[in-house]
Amino acid sequence: MRVAWLVLFLVALGLGVLAGPAGYIFILDASNSMNDPWAGGKTKFAWAQEALIQTIQALAEDTSFGLVVFGHRYAEPKEKSCADIELLFPFRSYSFAERAALISRIQELKARGWTPLAESLRFAAAAVPAGTRLILLTDGEETCGGDPKAVVADLCQKGYVLDVVGIALEAQAQEALRALAETCGGKFVLAAEAAALPGILIEIAVPAPQIPDCLAKYGVDPKIVALLLEHLPYPACDPMWDVILRFLAANPPAKVIVGTPGDDILFGTPENDLILGLDGNDKIFGFEGNDLLIGGPGDDLIQGGPGCDLILGGPGNDLLFGGPADDILYGEEGDDRLEGEAGNDLLFGGPGCDILLGGPGCNKLDGGPGQNFLYDEGICQPCPLPTLPPTTVKPAPIVSPAKTVEEGKSILLRAYVEDPDRDPVKVTWRAPKGFFSDPHALETLYYAPLVADCAGEFIPITVVAEDACGAKAEDTIWIHVLNVNSPPAVDAGPDLAVDEGGKVRLSGWACDPDGDPISVTWIVPCGRGSLDDPHSLTPIFTAPLTERCEGEVVELVLLVRDICGAESRDTVRIFVRNVNRPAVGG
Image (cartoon, rainbow, N blue to C red):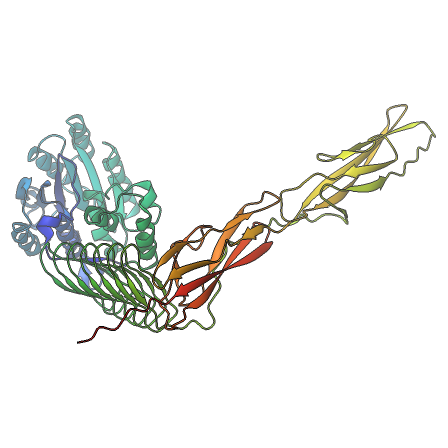
């Protein structure tokens, strides 16, 4: 999917990525063969013009570039057409305002003549400083008798590098142009499909920004990540990036809309949008689609609309509405009002005095630091249990019928030996783990080792019989040593009391007698409070508001499971006091 960027303040934002310091000179093939139809009712030349225009628009404002065109004025005679090479605009940096005139000149070009590749490359290099990168956009080889390979070899010695973008090339032309590009270590890219041509040219001229590994792993468009890194306050690898980039990876935006440092009114589309308000008191409307809506600093109003949206208010006193779907709302700094509306929503107030209203659905409300008001009208029937980490169990090997024994216990083994010569026979028992009461007896006890695998472990037991003359025979059986898994020990801590809307830290404890890794999950009745981290033994519990004058008891369950699936539970009772404030008379 092609991502469209709608930018209201392009000069200040600098969405283009800096090119190399030496800049670029584009060389456009306007020979007659470029008039061949390609795709969508358009010629190869029309597609090349579009690709060049999009690339020029994407270059940063301080990037120097120029354009050389050949074959655009004369079709015949051949001598005149082969000399038809023009520097359409000179090598320098162009402001975004100036580029409108350049684009108009590109749109006026016609493809007419022959293909003087060698002379065009020499001409372009002479028009720019040494070290400038040459980018050739062509559909064929030299037709004017020149030697492009010799010209490029000479340019290499002077510090130039040539990249070639081939347009629907035949196999022979591909090889020739690839060799041309590789002479100086440049790139050769074949545009076999018309729709791919603009992206190919942009990728060569506008390198993708460098993204930290901890952010690149999500697979989100690097230009989008670079934009967010520039304007969001979170340090690289902050946990908030996990929330943002997981959302974008699952919901790639079709439109990227960026506001100004002032007060903006920004509207999304029916598709997935990324809308960034920047500074100012902004009004942002996502409409349909799964949108990422970011207010930035200022007192913002953000409406998600239909779709599963991620909304970040940013610093300021914000008003956030999720809309009719499953939304995630972060108020962040400031005194915010968050309304989840319909759907199963997650509402996080952040620092400040926030109002969180859950709306219909199974919601999670977390006010964060500050004096908050939380109200959840949602109902969760039934309330789903949290998802616990999956238990990894290795498949048991396919073996011949085996005996079983529990780890740490013993099993009696007996060998039957017969020597046809009736020579004396020596017996030896062997095993990679565990030990034998007597490794040289016909009948012995095998003591099984302790095993870590939840499925137990299959251990080969080999008995070797050797007669006095050195003749040997052996046989092997498999012993399945069973893992005796003890459940974890758990204590949810003492019963507690807290004012409605207040916070209290829980004091859970758990351990596994076998030393296995454990997972911890607190289960909170839906709508009866929230935890800052339900997978911590000592999370902070935020009590719900209660309508009962006498207060109420909320029971939280601490569920602990070991890696082999054994689990234990304990319950803590928290008494929530009704803080009955006197009525104020008028």
